[in-house]
Image 1 (spheres, rainbow, N blue to C red):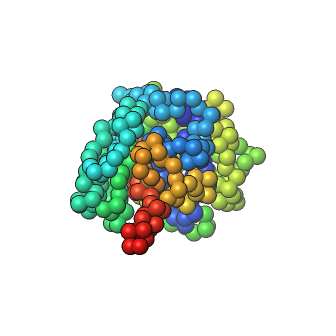
Image 2: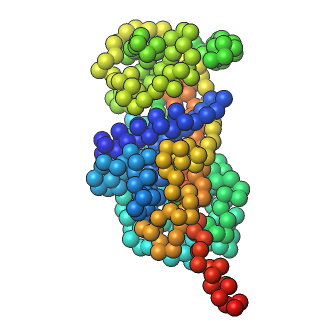
Length: 348
């Protein structure tokens, strides 16, 4: 189970470094990670090798049963963390029972037969509605129009909802409008929360960053880490030099010092959506998006992934954090290269 966590963190850094945007980003790499891991249950040969390598699962034995253990271990009475996986299958599609049974067992999924062939738009709205319910209304319209069609044979989904309170809340009366400096040196006005407490903190001069740990709940088993570049250091430079080992070192609580600090944190809310196919291809997951993909563990009929859709939401305020994310992996049939030959034969 610990190896799965390490793999997810490695995947997180890979994805974050390859997202190119000029705005605030909210993303749950864990949601993307889980949805692709579910699809990889049916991958074989080179396709499976590529998926496991990009997801950093290649050296883990009995990978998929460990996900079931992980989902169970993440539950805690001090916060709400709901993880819901889904598998929607075209009712006429010959999906393998072995795939259905494996995904059901290891990812806590109840596969649902749907009618993509006759009512793809209705199925799209149905899936989006379920995702909206699973994320307490925070993720809407995960699958955009035209993301599924009558050709779609399956959609794999993951949805996550988190609600957690700080160990010690920021006093509401301390929140004021204050100046915040963007990476462009532009000054904007934000709602700035403020408190004086004992925090875990660390100044890493060789990397030009400071790290602050904000804990949740009385047990403090979950934290938010704020990584702030030193004055004069471009945050893009920090992101470019980011690697898994460095992130793990920066956020190692045993290397931090406790200090009484006055901390100012912006009160913020971010929503964002991405389609990470290009990122996944650049990382080496190329076969899955081609008709030559080998998902023979899903069906004897050839299939491949036509799209990966992801949305995320995060809100940070005086009480804590509310966040949600969802990912949808759309699977379609591969074109049959023998079909034109059969048509020519029949015409002859």
